[in-house]
Length: 97
Image (tube, rainbow, N blue to C red; front, side):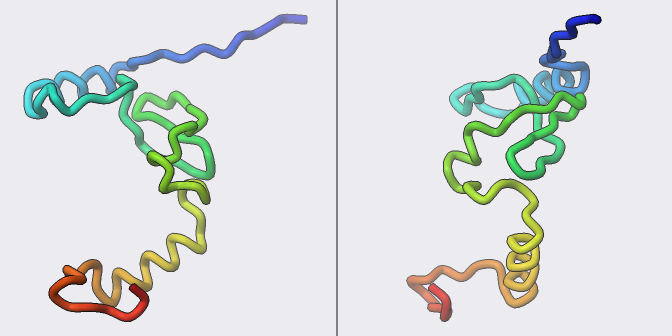
């Protein structure tokens, strides 16, 4: 029997490349806790551009309490985006607001 301890390779090659590009173009006052870049997410799991998987404890700073990529949320977003994506409510109101 072998004990295997999972490990992460962070930052990976692709995240390192993106971090170098970010440092060139984004002001240093805009910071990030982690030095990895998200590629996709589902439920509470985020996968970075190097294939590492993380539990999303931040939840999009609290706005993702239903998890990532929920089919019913994607459908609702798609239906709304087909109508319009944004108006300035103080200039022109819209009904569900």
